[in-house]
View 1 (cartoon, rainbow, N blue to C red):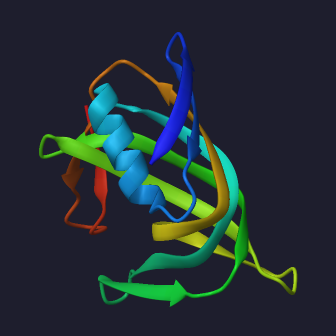
View 2 (view 1 turned 90 degrees about the horizontal axis):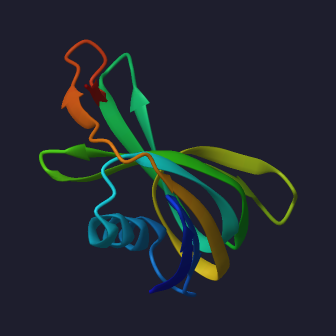
Length: 140
């Protein structure tokens, strides 16, 4: 699913072709006991699902794009919610016509490569739902 190297509290990951980015990241963070941290990287995918919270209706809208795209930027953070790994990941994806789409990444399947950097902050940061925004905010 992935290979990695580690120095101090920093990891360099290479995810295997055809795997789910979110599944691999969740498994990695759980196995390494990462309670909080940051994620950055790039890669290539052939399907990606983005999620958007419509603030007027407080309803999540998911949209899947089934096409080859370059992930020109992957940024996110790691925390915990209800004792489990909680990932908050955003991406920008470049299409074959060089236009870009992006936003909150629900999931994507690698087709090519995915190279990630994770920094483990070494402290526990939780999440709790905010009734006003409908989002899971940090809980310190």
